[in-house]
Length: 81
Image 1 (cartoon, rainbow, N blue to C red):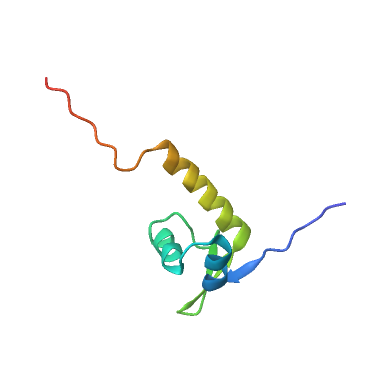
Image 2 (image 1 turned 120 degrees about the vertical axis):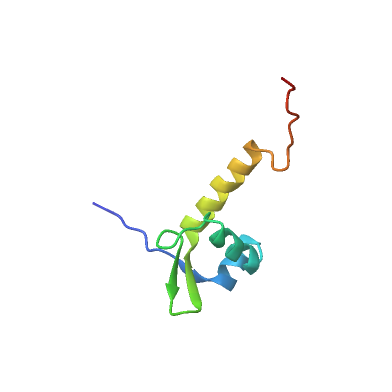
């Protein structure tokens, strides 16, 4: 027997509230290519975006893990030749 799970689609405001991040942060992650069209969200018309809640949450977990591995803002001194 095969089981399927229905995708849970949320508006930007609903998703931001569930993830406890701002709506602007969602938009920023979308612009930066962290969240991808067709995989994490769909555009409905020119303005409305709906989000796959599970896929987006998973992507943000992976992104967070990656950012912890790479220390943002670290600087390295260049060795003199």
